[in-house]
Image (cartoon, rainbow, N blue to C red):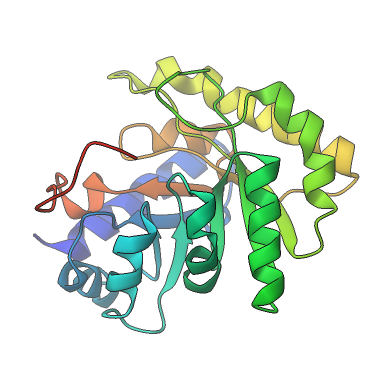
Length: 235
């Protein structure tokens, strides 16, 4: 697997999508989804120039991060259970998957104990899929003010996982609705939210055209995901 070529190809596609949207390529941050990848593969991707990685499971991340270069940056992008918040606050620079006031409150409590401020994104289930986590859009608007009052939490924007579609144009409305929701959240808070985390390997170019600032790329960088021995289908 030529990680350098894969990484260069993704950056070319990001640049082309930005050109179509009349945006600067530097306005889009590439996050490499390293779930189920071995530390060796993360190190190889880092050697190719990638520095930001995303993990879905706290336990896997805890073992992996310790075996990777300390210069790398890590985001939590998977569903987070309250009993894993202590470790998540210690391991990650951002938690992209805050989907309830209760979870935000526990992150705030753990961040306070760690004497740090925790940047977060609020995960929104824009399409209302029963198989996915995330806030219903209306509930984000109802709770964002209370989350914003938590002293150790910094809301940096919104995140969504779009429904799977062979034609990425079919999920363009999902990305557009998240962008519109971010504008409504900014009006409520009276402050800008810098990030929209949306778009994965199959649809990130459309997401960029609709305003994504963070794209989460796994298989297009690392190749098809290999399930580790013992991994279950559960969250």
